Image (cartoon, rainbow, N blue to C red):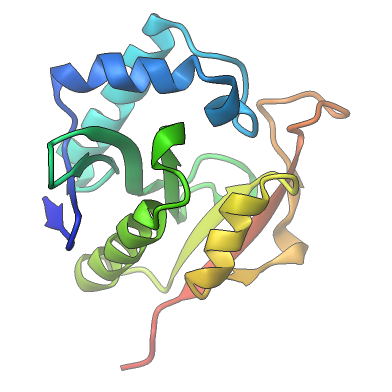
Length: 177
């Protein structure tokens, strides 16, 4: 568990399914991620994160707001699985729409990166998104990540020409000691 001023990043619980499923059915939340998700896909996504947490000690953790215990989404680190980040440490986040613009994603991402440097033997942490997802790559820049145009790629989950096919890549290097 990671605690910040306003957030708790923690393992997934059964009660996270319903609010996470609601996020997966939001056109706004899923705009840059893919099709709306079924309950089965949500359950599979949660199970993948639980498996990562059990085997690696980290995952895209559930985000809970400290003030009221509300589930806000996820943020954390997991093994990358697509294109140039396959096998690299990937940071990712997804928040429910009413949590956007409040600094929660940045707070959670900064805590996740700090956790990664303290607990993982990795020279870098990477992130991907679509070029149209300006909020996501804007956060990557604010986190100190650098665009790696040489690692941009076509995401294998989508067909060439699909609006989500093109992906851009960012990375942040471990700070010097």
